[in-house]
Amino acid sequence: MAHTDWHAAAQSLVDGFSSKANPDDRIQLTEQLCDRLGGNLYPAFLHILFNIEQYADAPAKTLVTSTLVYGLNTGRLPSGKLAAWGSSQLPSNSAFGQTRSLGPIEYICAWYAQPSDQSSIPLSSFNTMLTSLINLVDYDHTAKSLYCSKLLADAEDPLGGGMSSQTRVAIGELATSWQAGNDAQKIARQFTDSLQDNSLLAQMSVDRLPNL
Image 1: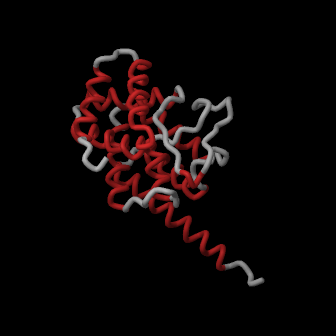
Image 2: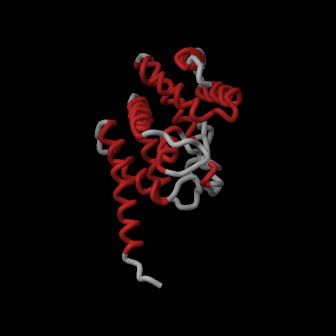
Image 3: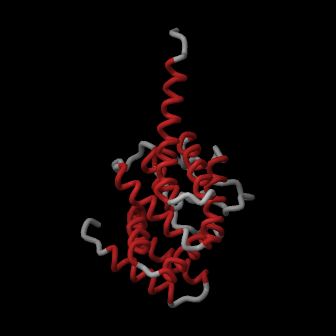
């Protein structure tokens, strides 16, 4: 994976999407990519999206973003789980499909915020990747609106199992900041500030407990 040509992989995905007018066909192409990546789906898919945001033209970014959010709404968004947080099942009447998807933004946030079987991601890398993902989704207004709604729903749902309560609070503040029209850097800072604030509150509550 260290020597993968992510730029070429991103170009290949954009070319494939451009050749298919039907969003279901584009999602099927994405699923084929996921099958090839297998256990390396994340963070490989994050690298591909980063290269698309950095180097693709505006129509290509819009096409990719609209396809991903179509996958989100149909329960077919490429998803990942961090082993430390177990199952990702949603109730069958969920507005976002039968199973909880930790999509690209949720995944990078949980990866940074929560201990897992993966090596930790440095703050600088996290900020670079998260701001890139937000900027990519911003190319499609409908996609942004739907993704923000999904994040807010995640923040209110303690049953998904993919994110800790602290991560969900920070995700909710991220989504609120995003909806308010803030730039990607400020949105990312809102997430990390929320994590720090909630961590301090948790520590204060422990410090106030009486000695037994």
